[in-house]
Image 1 (cartoon, rainbow, N blue to C red):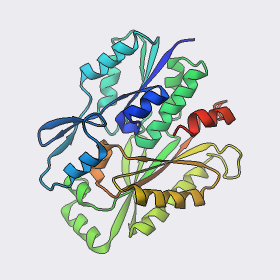
Image 2: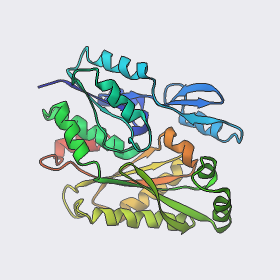
Image 3: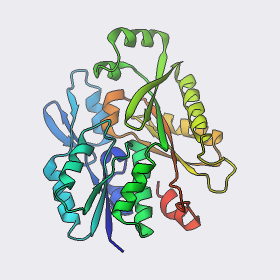
Amino acid sequence: MSKIAIVTDSNSGITQGRAKELGFFVLPMPFVINEKNYFEDIDLTQEQYYELLSDENAEIHTSQPLPAQVMDLWDSLLGEYDEIVHIPMSSGLSGSCESAMTFAENYDGKVHVVNNQRISVTQKVSCFEAKKMADSGMSAAQIKERLEATKFDSAIFITVDTMKYLKKGGRVTPAAATVAGILNIKPVLKIFGEKLDAFAKSRGMKNAKQVMIKAIRDELEKGYGGEDSEHPNAWIGMAYTYNRDIAEEFMDEVKKEFPGYRVFLDPLSLSVACHIGPGSLAVSCTKVQPDGMQYNEDDKKRYWDAL
């Protein structure tokens, strides 16, 4: 059986510390803030980032990992592992996936880059699924094929507390942002596959949360497994920017609405947070891998509890 390394980037929400505990390898995403280079979870913490973001004059730009950074990690891992499964953020949201695919062409089939168009908590689930498949004896090529075949079995819904950062990034007009602020409109966005689209508009955060809960319920009704099932066939992941207390309150609401499902909560990766700002909330559902990839009691301890 091949020894397979699972690589991802910090957009997955897997920190450097957790990666070491769980056996993953995480590329930190780079930032340029006021012309200074930073790397997420290396020399830029969540707290430091939001402090810098609060500065109206701060110039913040995201970037891709440098080619040398990616290939140096792969070269190091291939001294110990036979193959690599590399799971970057969605190709629709960054060029880092396409870049990695180009780099992988020079590795004689030993590096398999997965383009399953996920980010944040859904990308994290892909990493755990890949680890489970590797542990079960599947090859890197088989893991890549499975993850890409099921890339649409997932959706994320996000609401923002302020339109300021969407306006700053050119995603909404200044006029629309002003009207939204006056009317207390909280947009709900949806990430499905490679697309980030508007999903709904709500008056106030309370209504926005209800819109997202209904959206998750509608997704689960598409065949993710019933709430009364002993092993529901979906993960429910939640994410937030900056304010964990508010996010935990929302998580309690979600758990009450979906009592049969495992629910986990992560900070949203900084690469996403810079476009939507603090106070944002997200909830997602991701179908568990089919065809014998269900989770038994031992798996729940090793994989579900690890989330």
